[in-house]
Length: 249
Image 1 (cartoon, one colour):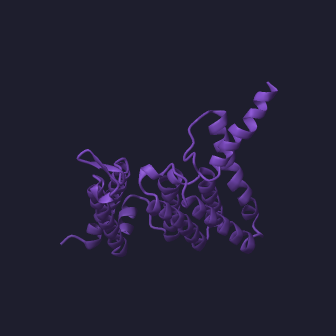
Image 2 (image 1 turned 30 degrees about the vertical axis):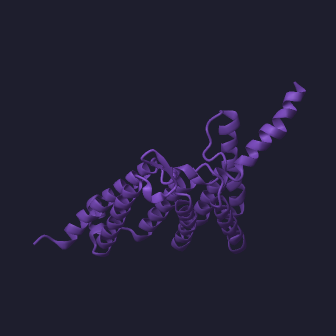
Image 3 (image 1 turned 135 degrees about the horizontal axis):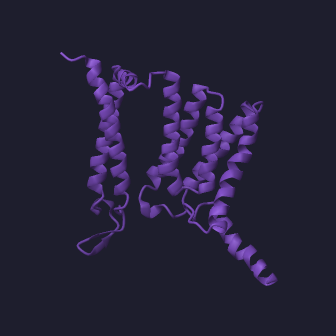
């Protein structure tokens, strides 16, 4: 009989493929309107009439099964064997670090950037990365990943359909509150660390500079122009500042 860990090693790679496929197809399904759908030429706001319901159900179940398979593989030693066979190795601290980074980037890219003000969600990203990873403490990594995941899950659950992405909503405020809470916490309990002291400045200055350069310098599209901060920046640029330059000319 074949070694059980060998089977679980294959389960590990299979689960990763299934997770990637599930996430991809869920992302593609967001192109199908979940609300304001048409049935027989009649517009309906009932979500259960949407053609997206069945794909969402199938791929969510597929994702849950893949996550279950991944958990079993890790528990039974298949993940360790698979990674060692690939020459990656099995270092618990390294896996925690990579896992937390993956969680943060996943929720930032797929949940926060499309739905939340770019400056706010990027500030949360920068602060969580500096706090969680600059000194290599696993507990701080987990805490940082959990905070970003909470913000991302709230944005996913409350404003999942693509039709809702460009509308101003409460996930901006939730992300802002989480960023402020994390910033205050780090400044109180870790203010002796230089990286922590400069984190709030970098968290605001870097995304703000980038978004201003994109929108008004290079005239490029900006994610979520109706976001809490950028909508005010854009309004005052065109309504308050630009008329002043026009008068001088």
